Image 1: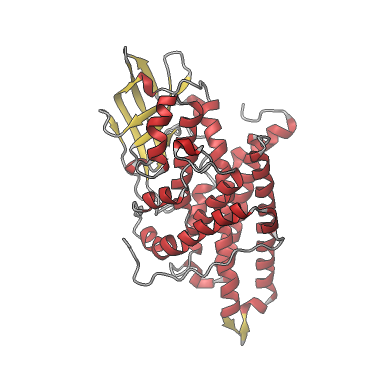
Image 2: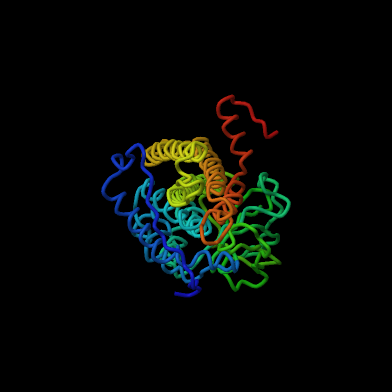
Length: 399
């Protein structure tokens, strides 16, 4: 296996289920979860620490994730998707992020931010051309919304395009774009001459389109991040989404991706908890396992409590998604809650492991650093709080 570390860690993960949530899942849900969990144990856990230490993206996993069905699992099968429900999708993201947030990010971007808008807003020609190759991992995609000076306020974006006959000419740039350095396809949001935000599909090789890699990250080190730069890029008009105008286009994609994040970060939290629990039973100090001391039990008890609450919240949200009843504000609450739970659990787990908690021999510090990105991207922690605030008061604190 490429990048296999000489001292690859053994993945002995056991999933916590304190309130028997499995009783609420179908057999298909459990089969989907087990297939992804087995894949992570076999293909991701043995190599991911080495890739993270080297700040390198394991490109070979793209084809593997496509073969496993992790790209666009809720997209209909006629376009190459899995035709699965949203709880299956959530469980997939949970297991992938249990391995690494960067791996889940790769799948989230591909499915929710590239395939979903092509399916939801694109023409039939666009669906047939792009979705099957994205679904099987032959092509990797990215999503261009955030700009260097416009993050939480995407409506102020500067990227724009002008009509030039049978094509448009796109100028501008995007920043902090997952998958960008290796993507064949980019879904880009920019303003037309009327100032309306539109979605365009760009392909690698278009003249004036470049994807510089972002270096020096302390987080998501095993994920590829870059910029999208548009210097008078000629984009055929048939590459513009016909089915949407305005911010509702990109925000609709982000709602789907945030749903996956809510489940994903719980996987990272579970991995930290499971690691800390096992360590507390093996590490002996003062002639007894440290798991027998009150302060360690307090940390572990609080971890499993918060995991259980988040599991139930995610399951209920998944049920609402399946019924078409979930609101973007509910998704925001789950995304923010999951991130907060995961960050706190990672920090407490690190303390239980003491000095070993910062070692690459264990996954905790890698998860902790990754979560610092997840807490910010696709809506910062504070922005999601204000989305809830606006939903319950009816008052907009953004303006």
